[in-house]
Length: 129
Image 1 (cartoon, rainbow, N blue to C red):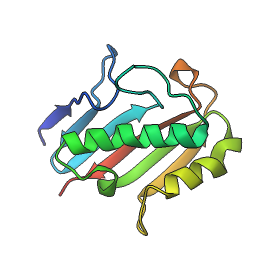
Image 2: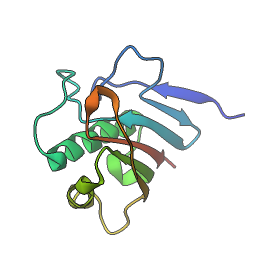
Image 3: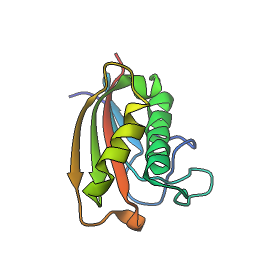
């Protein structure tokens, strides 16, 4: 069995819930779900869904960086959770601006509610090989 190492960074939001910001198992990093929370204030960022998407991606990139990776460039799979699929196109635009010609695989689902009543959450898997 592969050793699993929890990843914790001050550059992404954390709380008292029983989970790690990320877990590295070999060359694979599993990043927990993040909403648009500013790690410095612990508050949901103001702004439209594009601004909130950027904050979520910044949070994920911080965990990847702390695990020894290269931010969003190392992502191989992302799941997007939206409380309203009417935001889908605007999320796609903001998301697409953060990736080059080879974006990670992705799933997007509409959910009834997210913690803190945010509109978006993402989790990710990264390859750090």
